[in-house]
Image (cartoon, rainbow, N blue to C red; front, side):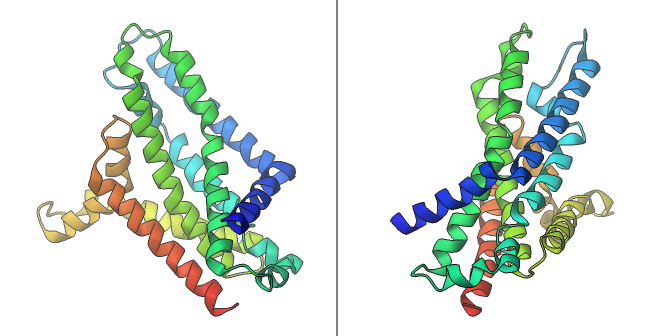
Length: 248
């Protein structure tokens, strides 16, 4: 446990002490500001029939943030170590591949979670101007936060897998973005099927990211959604661990 915490603090420190971490933070803050501005202009003086979190999710900026931030966060996790020559030194120390992978993934996930803190603070501030507190209660915020973190965990695990396959951070980011876009585009397949009652429809409905998040942003936590994200994340991390283990 002490080795893991040492590696974890090292990885977190890299995000907070390098320019790339603050560039990612600035990009996310800009997109969050644009999304909230869009919501305010759209609902200014109008009655809302949905929670504020669902109104934010209906803007295109949510998926922009997730799809762009996750590859930017994970691109340096393994690729930077390989390009600078520190990866070989790290793997020859008395640490296990699982500890290395766990520390890198958890630090990326923590930094990803910190990026969303300004959004929740802004929403709480905006919630003061609503007459109906049901538009933004604790359950809705908790459900949305869980959904955001689950989507992030899946995309970050895919990013770690892409980063471990190459020495170039740019290639790692492009590979991660391509894989994440493929998962994202699969969410549209359910709307293109002529038969909505077959097993194909049930399959693509289960893997549709839109269906999962549409429940989370309303404060609905379904065990099937959690199982999908946990299994998909575990599968990506397992593939990354096997690659690190086989090349140690």
